[in-house]
Length: 422
Image 1 (tube, helix red, strand yellow):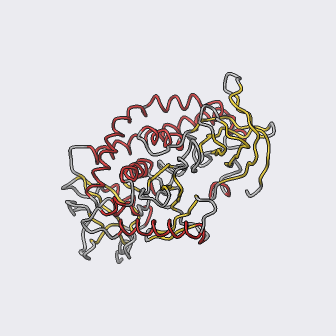
Image 2 (cartoon, rainbow, N blue to C red):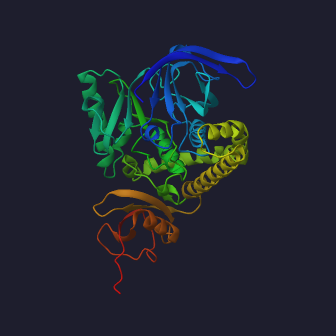
Image 3 (tube, one colour):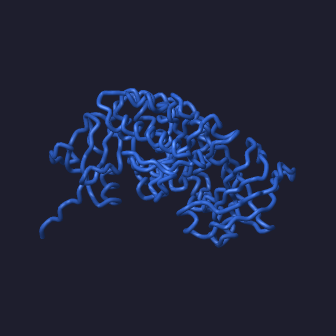
């Protein structure tokens, strides 16, 4: 993975026209879990010697080749980036599908993506700081600590001590303004709440179990009165029901981080409703035709990719896998989006129910219609995945989840059910 090579890049369109060509100053492997598992269809970073546009995307030096090897549909990242662009997530990633060849050898169908970085035609260079929520082991001089966990600092690349002290203090104060607010919206002095609401919505729709733990980016201008902005969104290989934690449409299978506390603000919930109204307006563009077009575009390349990496026994088997995988993605995306639109834009009032482990750590949540009980399917999902069921309120009141009527936003502790004596 740490190896680097130089070379040349040429992009040719489907009709044989040379789109662009450049000198590659560096190509290297990228990814963590994706690099070390699930075969050798890996992803790469490419740095060009000079800025260049690729396949109609804006000129830059750095590009990412995503292999989507955890995603049998190959569509999850593309779908997410396209939706983010439609609803105006700041600096939403642009991307194109392409067949990749290295030294004349076919490598498979890849998604060519813009890199998340501060640069011309990316996050505007007037921004100085780029941070990422990252719970992996980080170097102290390249990270900051908050009450919501550590954040990696990607920019400035070579921070001075003063710059590190500034962003560390700003992130700490931002997190504390959210964590300790009591009937206060002081957090609005620190964050761009509209961009945070859009990231919240993208997390909910994709139901990515890595949300707010990895690949959640934020950026900020220099030491001015500017605010922290959420975005761009990145990396959805494990989303849309791939992971068992997110397979129940009505259960959000990820940790919320500071969004759990932001949701308590009425002003932030108003921002969320506005964002979901935007999603409601663009949702028809992501109908069956969007997914049918994707299958048509990918079909030949998909078959070659599966044969190349021995992930299917025949082209026919690969075609069947693509059809099934894209259809499953469409069903998950549609069902999840329509459920959330009902929650945030419907006529009925819904309440947020947080499920917590003993000791107070939130791990999943759902939205329940006012005056009803938690759906049995949600409880079954929690039990099947975590081996526990909701049974106690924050004030230690024991409840029967099947009869307890939800009338407000609440947190419910989950415990393993007691074994019946023979």
